[in-house]
Length: 358
Image (cartoon, rainbow, N blue to C red; front, side, top):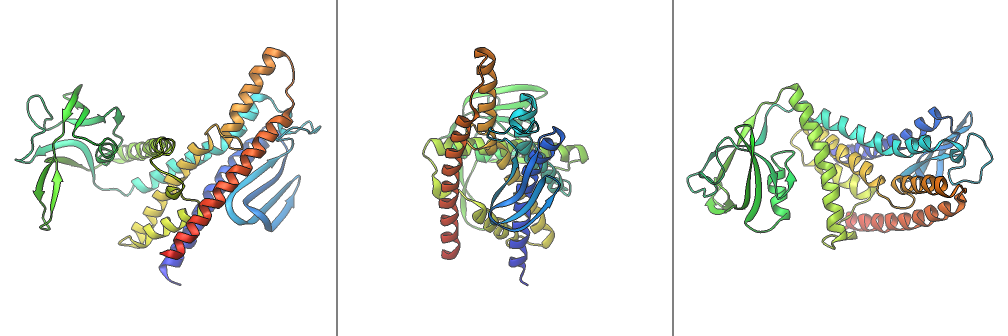
């Protein structure tokens, strides 16, 4: 069996694990809250394996898209005293939020696993300047400055510096540094690039800043993992902003097929099996945190949409002293689910076509 096939299988298992962890969050909190769980399923579509244990049916389905934890009375209409809609509102809130919380937790843990073997890393502290640099000086950047913000965006890692600058074209930026224990803001600062000859003989544009190479201790590695997690949350926010702003479209989005393909491709391009595994785990952590944030968006059928509907219902019923018929929320989430499945089908079709064109 070729390494590429192995990497694909590992990617599929890792993606399945992320879905399983999400649904397990709902499952566990539902059980602890006394809510009856009718079915706990990994993936969607026709069942290829199922087993009844107590009141819950456990199943594995054939279409590798998502999964679900089906609770009694989830959309109302149940007389069962242990149904979801009969539980206290705060218990329902915990159950709905638990899936995203589990995804975020597993994402952070994967980031920790990836960061622990790191021996050296570059930090956004300026070590020195090249002779051609024009960004340094009494009113500019200085050696020892730790860059903490660029254009209002916090730097969680050294790589954020170039990433944030790429999102804001132009040479004038707002730079915040920590200098001698104090924050210094360089407003409308000219970050001028210069064309230089690189070691390989080619030319490139450089600012002329050299950054510091650091050897992190255990606690600093944990901090790196946490910052990578927060950085991933920001990447989701920036991606959504670009999507809403029309800068990216469906062609730039990936579903399960595209994600597995990218994970295996990253692993195959690694220089060793250990590096391949760490790269896949990092990708897995990135996807897990993405799933956590995306699921909390206030969109019908997603956990975030259900949480918003729950809070609105609680407030309205408290004010009017009247019970809202849960079937209307059920209709809303049903319509949302149809639209989401249609979008996922389009993205999967696009991913499959792209896969065969490669």
